Length: 420
Image (cartoon, rainbow, N blue to C red):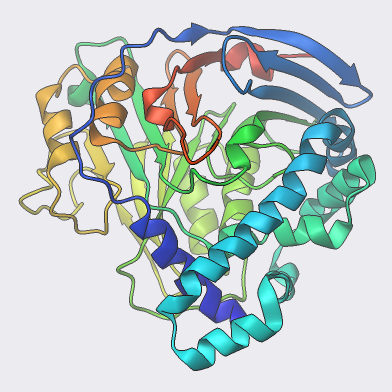
């Protein structure tokens, strides 16, 4: 029973925490760091770089070899960070359950209070393990061996995206929407989730270099020791993003393929969004979410992803309503429950239509719409670069949201070509 109750608890908690007034923010005019990172260390299957002039720095971790070897290498090279983060994450999640439990009927509160969070996470693992490729667990076993952290604890940490959902924004702009720029497709992924947790203390850009014949090189914007894909970009190139689908009223199911592992498989194995859509359609899905998929040929699609069905939207068939005008070669979803009556994101995109570019998405869309409080990324497919930003750590009740902080530009051609 817990595995079906906790998603509702966390959805309420996270969504309520992310619904600030829209279009009240100011433009973000901070300069963008240009590939501003330095080498730190390496081991048999990993190389570690770190950004400069950002506090805390983002770890850029190159991982090579088999899944187990990559897990072991990450565990060894990021051991101090992971060893601090894992217990802090578990404490944070337990505290969130305590804050959210009052939203539930008493009998449901009793179930959670008796069984606890670990039981909910382990039940989620048992419900999903038969649908999850074994190489994810091989990598987690390596991570456990590299850090000395209990294997089941690491598995439990990787189940929490199945229990939480985030109110995020996504944008795909191409063709006429960007015709006065030099791009092919620009994709925004803004993660509006928690900012009072420990995650932003140890941000990481994980760059995977699988063995030959085992898929694409790809990257995920994450935190130390977390191998699921919340935000990512591959060498194909394909870009991913996701958002909670709170208005879904169909079947709730927890027996299937965890969505953050499926999205990572898209990055590793799919060469365009057509093959990614086939993967989604043919999978045993669990949570109800919106997925954003981009590639420079097929442009951008928004997917309503659920256990019951998959609906695929482009710029021509996405529902139109007063706060969501349709624009050619532009597809977007704001951070609110869909359909949303908040006009901010649509207005911002209308203002720059025909010349939308990464700078506008960074300086105006995220900052003025106040989206991407946890982290955000902009993918420039033609230039093969990504721009990322992370929230500051939560200290004494204060923090700076990601959209108000300094962004860093990464040359993905260079990162994907990095040799061990």
